[in-house]
Figure (tube, rainbow, N blue to C red):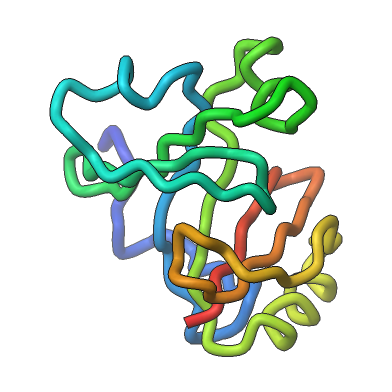
Length: 139
């Protein structure tokens, strides 16, 4: 008997199209400056009502997300002590990826808008009862 997953036997899920690729995990923090010891670039996004910074932890990109207001989803997550907020995938065509996601049980909860943290590239938010919150980032 072996323990752990045999990586060759892991089933591949295609939720947002064949060219969707993992980009980062979103992590809610009370303070970005208190979460990292080094200087990081912090970007404020008034549309999303958050400040964000990107770090790399053991090979995984992490978006640290700090609320800019009391009435944000990130504030609610922190109050419930939920830190892991979302997964993000890059996609070549965000509208097509939303349609594919819908066919796989994801509901678009925020239509595409430009994101300051990504140089104005479009992002959209989808939710699945099974997989939780997903951010799509158009390449």
